[in-house]
Amino acid sequence: MEKQQTDPMATVEGLSGKASAALGRRVFMRYIGATAAAGVALSACHSELVDPTATGSARPGDAIDLGDIGSKDVNVLNYAYALEQLEAAFYTQAVMTPYSGITDAERQILTDIRDHEIVHRDLFKAALASAAIPGLTPDFSSINFNSRASVLGTARVFENIGVSAYNGAGQYIRTPDYLVLAGKIVSVEARHASIIATLLEPMSALFAGDQVVFPASGLEEIRNPEEVLAIVRPYVKEFLNGRNGRR
Image (cartoon, rainbow, N blue to C red; front, side):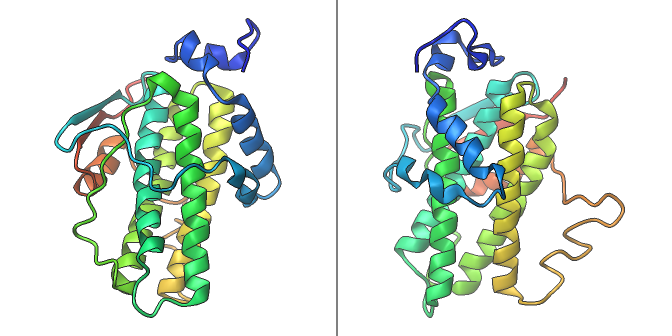
């Protein structure tokens, strides 16, 4: 992408001009366009998928400080990038080592979700460029990938965390393009949560019952960054640290 003074991405708060210049505009705009109609057209981005087994450069035990999540966009994006790394790695493993008795439909659903999460992960990595946190090392030792209940139960946890994390952090995003992007991603994450809930308990209140979509607000759960990071820390070998926004 050629850097221009009028480039709106060059003004992303917290990202240097160099980092912004490195943003894959084509990927970013393509993603937005692909999800504009229904939020489910992520397959249009499959040509952007990278090696699903790609890993990062962080070392187990390292502390990854995301800073004050609300202080600037780069921190919010890195927060989302960390979560998307976790989800992409989980579904990659689930598809590579399918649980006993998996059906063709379940395999396809998990594969589709894996591809979505890889697109999300790679999109944030491209957007952040040199400002991105290192690649994380997942710790899935508590998950039995041979067990349907364990895999789908964990998938449900991850998807619900993802939705609540975007709901909680969206307020901190200053750049309109990124806010639009986050809104579209969370709509996809909510679809993931719904289909996983349906696989676990078909025709139940898990799909959109009162414990999922709160009647008083019409919204799903909202978690602040510290709540989210406390839940996901056991699944990452690095120590993820971040503070609630203080805008």
